[in-house]
Image 1 (tube, rainbow, N blue to C red):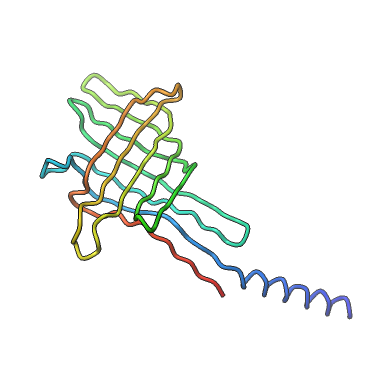
Image 2 (image 1 turned 45 degrees about the vertical axis):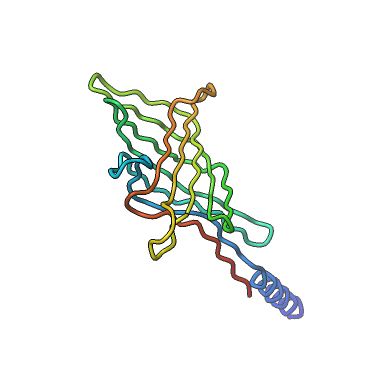
Length: 170
């Protein structure tokens, strides 16, 4: 009976210690249409959501990214399927992330798929009430040989980008 009591007390103390730790979530999310700074019309559609959760000495990160745009006579689609790195600066309202991705280029004669790594930088410049500079998005895709195959830079014309940090402790 004493062993059961000690085991129960140990479980209660372990649970209390685990609940007393702080968890923090940092990340960014957004969706919308982007275009060149000197254009009124968007030429790309994007959506993403990335986050890193830290809890005590453990952490987990995950996310996704997609971009579709038309360049010349090509339809370019980029999809990140595995987040590898994430950096969030909530003071500057910026986030940078990278991960494994597939670039698909469609033309009238066919399509080509390229595997590689995408590097994305976003800035949450506009406040929720609509004042301030437009949010920005920069994307660079590098193939497996290290060659830059695709790059895009633009301002958000419709939609929003949000960079956030949330922390909670008990």
